Amino acid sequence: MLEVKGLASYSPLGHLNEFRKDPLHFLSDLYNKHDTIVSFRFAHRKMNLLLEPALIKEVLVTKQNSFHKSKPFQEMKTLLGEGLLTSEDEVHMRQRRLMQPSFTKQHIQTYAEEMTMITEEFLCSWKDGEERLISRDMMELTLAIIVKTMFSMDMYQGHERVGKHLDIIMDIATKRIRSVLKAPLALHTPQNKSLTEAINAIDKVLYEMIEKRSDSNIKEDLLGVLMRARDEESGEGMTNQQLRDEAMTIFMAGHETTANTLSWCLYLLSQHPSKAERLYEEVDRVLGNRRANHDDMKELVYTQQIIWESIRLYPPAWLIGRKAIEDVRIGNYKIHKGETVLISPYIMQHSEKYFSNAEEFIPERFINGKVKDVPEYAFFPFGGGPRVCIGNHFAIMEATLVLATIAQQFTVELLQNQHKVEPEPFITLRPKSGLRMIVRKRR
Ligand code: HEM
Image (cartoon, rainbow, N blue to C red; front, side):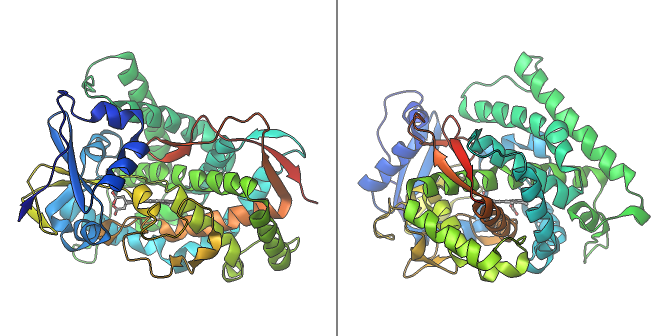
């Protein structure tokens, strides 16, 4: 077994500052200069960046038992408790068993109509020729969809009761993840106080929602399914604390990712008028003036190709991390217990080795969500193995119906004086400084 070759650094922080300055450039540069695997340091922590699909598969699938989620996820336990994103081993397996039935392709179909209705209602506030902060709009829209479909909460209350607190939490969480020295949460710093207040505000909404529902009042939304779910082995259901943790996890994982995907789709369409024309032709032919529903998914082929290609170029989950819980062999290399392994959908999905004209926006390269001859784990925007995104079908259906409904009614163009739109690797990959566009009514 070989030891992983490491980059030299004489700074006590290792490569942390270089990474922080421009993470996508840092990782892409390593990809271009190294094969298979390379390591660097964040202070005393050794990070191993995987550069080959076969190795990525080992970490996510075949040898996943040798890994736990990496440090940022462990940090997020303060917020998400033992929810699906942050829990490990038996707890994770049990929660996944209980939640999986609510996310099957068949079950999520029941949310299609609500998704389109909410989008139509949301678009009523768009005026012909006005300038909009599209990135903010997409966040509000996907939050409205998640709170309604998953928790039957009024879409207009979503931002007031949940969204504005989530914004604070995401902002502070990112700052904490990026800083080397952070104040323990028990300390009464102004930042910790804001974080605690934001978490408490959402907790209050969630616990009220859980307690208000008597058995006779259980709805067919996600919370309803989770409240009824019983573990096959033990026959036990979820406690209120577990329900709260899963609900918070869905709020966190289930709206910003899809919002960013939609923003990137609209941005890319504004830069590629001929692709936008093809989209309008498709939605006019398939939908005309009527509301999109689940059955239209099989006809909205180009709409979905646009979504897959946008996710390839701008994968919301741009970096996935794992920590080795024991010594383990990955490919021919030894990863020591305690080391971190980094996997970047962004760098793999921009590789010329797997995608011809990788930097270009070519929706046509996707057929049924796949690109011909691209190996497994060269394109993996939803991760893989037992921790693959549980919301993947939900996200693709939502993005398709929302994009088709927007394209039915509006065209979008970038503001003349809009700064260059660049990706900003926050917790998810967002358009830096937001995305401002002019929206014009089509009919
Ligand atoms: C385009 C949209 C989305 C993308 C690109 C995305 C991506 C991902 C990725 C890469 C992971 C795996 C992370 C890892 O292995 O460390 C993940 C996990 C997860 N995602 Fe998504 N996601 C999206 C939308 C959603 C939605 C809509 C929901 C819920 C409604 C959701 C809920 C989750 C949950 C709960 C997990 C943790 C699963 C587990 O560990 O068992 N995601 N997502």
